[in-house]
Length: 421
Image (cartoon, rainbow, N blue to C red; front, side):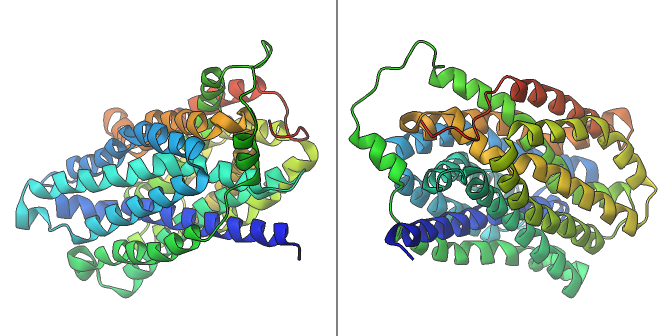
């Protein structure tokens, strides 16, 4: 094994493991949302408490663009490695904080206020982590393997969601509901905070990307009139990321709540079903990333948009009156469908930008899409159902997102076989 190959594998492992922990920490919140609603908000109105819990989930996203700007800029000026060390430390602090906050019954209004502060720390971290980790991984990729390597960022994201869903499902299986509501929900947050130290150690011992080092060594280049500005590139990334983030937050974060409230599953059944869909998604992502290196990014991206324009309504309708087996099959289908986008998407995003400004503007484009359309997706889904009285009304939100992103994808140049700029 060459020294370059060894450095590349070490860098990939550190980025993937650290990003997995970031998203495990971030996702656990949604998987125990119904319990958090009972612990951190006044008792009485269950729907109002759940809305408040998802509102806190969404409020955390408001700060994501700020994290994207600050940490993304650090990634372009000080290096991708420095930025990723900051994000993993902040995520660990926010996660342990949630685990230790006393309930509303103990400290009153201070409980939800502290919960908001913890979520803001986590969201500031994720705002910079997502795009910086993508840039780090893809910049380390060998020629003609950017789609495959970039897909590992999504594998790590899904693995974090999978780990969070699996831990929540396991705890709900082995701990009785009363104990889970009382203290068991704190365990996954403590786990995430503690093992974050492993990710921090791994990231401290990797090298900066060759592409970044080369860009820093070169004099500032003049941009040709034909080349789009970083701001316009960020706008393209914003539209591109909408269905990416909406599909994740509706089908992977909100789904356990939907299947419990409207499909008749128990808490444990809904989490195990969600975990199965996540597992298949994780398996399919690298296959789609590798396929995009061969046939291009756009065919797979457009196929995903078409699926999410046509299928969400009938799938949600089936889940309403479906059995556990039916719901499980639907979640497996959704996992494969999301993989069509999630596989090639990281490399596609990286290829939109130049190396010297990639971390900052890619972070901003994605973070804005995640804030506006993704972070509030569970809240919007709950609100739409409350207003319309129809449990399948969130599907129209997904379908609209598919249309917007399809237009954005059609406007992108096919870059699978072009060198990084």
